[in-house]
Every structure is written in structure tokens, then in C-alpha cells.
Amino acid sequence: MLLLVGLGNPGPSYAGHRHNVGFMVIDAIARAYDFGPWRKKFHAELAEGTIAGTKVLAMKPQTYMNDSGRAVIEAVQFYKIPLSSLVVIHDELDLAPGKLKVKAGGGDAGHNGLRSITAALGPGYRRVRIGIGHPGAKELVQSYALHDFSKADQVWLAPLIEALVKTAPLLAKGDDMGVMNGIALLTQPARAAKETKPKES
Image (cartoon, rainbow, N blue to C red; front, side, top):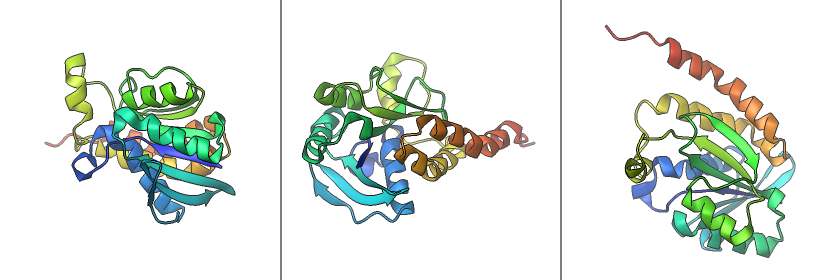
């Protein structure tokens, strides 16, 4: 079983925030692959489905970001899931908007959700890091992350989420490099359109 965790904060007031992009991706994947209904368990919302022949448990912790590890460790222990089968999808300040990296292990780069999960389980799980960019000053980080994506962000956000949905079978199979290559190919038209878009006169 693959445990696919999207990080975010619960409730409608947070739904459009940059910090909630993990929830957005999980919702899109669950819809696209006809997962079962969301149910409450392990201080989280869970939905089960199958991707590329792999049973997948989708999770959205409802503990608020800083305590995400409490929800994740309960599911990991209950289902006896190895860290190699835990994938956490989250926003990343240190990547440019629309950039994406998939990797196993590493630090938390100041991300409170990752810090909580690492404290509970160690750092060996896989991460899908979705770049949201940095506001430029440390004191601006909180208000930037806890704010809705801008209109300019929509140019890359929707194509990136769609690309993640399409490459989910590779993610389920553990082909992290294949995911990154696939995303790069699938989002290239969106990037090109953004770069060549004529200025309004």
C-alpha cells in the first residue's frame, strides 16, 4: 500500500492558500482515479483507491499543519507502511513557482508539516516538493504562505496539478525520476505560453 499524504490546513478559509497545495493535489488525484468517499480516521480525512495496480490510501491531516505527524504516524503504524511507501506532497518556498522536485529523505527546510512528520517517523519518506516561491523576506513568509494563490499563479498551478494527476501511476510505482521527467514534458507548453504571452497594449 502507498500512503499519499497532502499537507494543508483544514477548513474553507484555508482552502485556496499556497500552503494548501498538497490538499489540492490529493483532491485532484482522488477525483481522477475514482477513489472511494472521504472518511474521518487517524485525525485525518482518508480515501482509498487504486493507481496502476497499487492500492493507495490518500490522506489529508486535519490536525493543522504543525501537528501533521500525529495523523501520519497513526496510519503508518496501523497499516505497517514502510517509509519508502509514504509520499508527502507539500509546498516549497525554496523552489520557484511551478517548479517541482521528488526526492526521498532530506531536511524540512523550515516547513512545519515536514518537521512534525520527521519528528514522528524520521526523514526517510518520499516528498513531492511543489515550488511556490519566496516572498523575499523572512518576516513575510507566514502571510505569503497563508494567502490565496494569485491570478498570475493560475498560469502554472492548474497545468502542474493536472500533470501530477497524469504521472501518479509513476509515483505509485516508485519512479520518482520518471515523475519529474513526465511533469517537465507535460508542463512545457504552459511555461512556453507564459514566456511568449504578448503584452497588452
